[in-house]
Length: 178
Image (cartoon, rainbow, N blue to C red; front, top):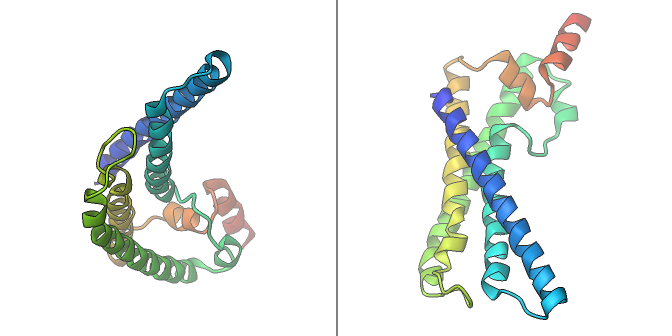
């Protein structure tokens, strides 16, 4: 199961690189056109903004998978294994509730966005704001998998230490010190 997720995350990372490179090309091209030729491409300006939105929300899923979001690691690092597990489960429940609220909000907003189109490109605004579905399902799914692995006892020490903000090296040093 986790191997399939790793493959999917690698695909998302490639998509993030493509989005970022596309944004850079579009913005740079518009700067050159604006200051060099007193013109510009409106479509690229609008699409760069939408790519930034997609980049942010897709990046949130990848970042969650890598335990790279901000956390109160200085507190969690002080706990032993059981304390860290309790913090992880509580954190996961809170995140799952937030993702459910985020999904619900995106769902309620969907009909409104369906009736609006982007000013220049003319695509439905659901293509822009609908990325909330992906983020809510992506992070929510990762949380459910981690909760199930925790409940069934299949969570590894490396995963618990990563949640606490410790790499494998820091965890080894900490265990030797205890």
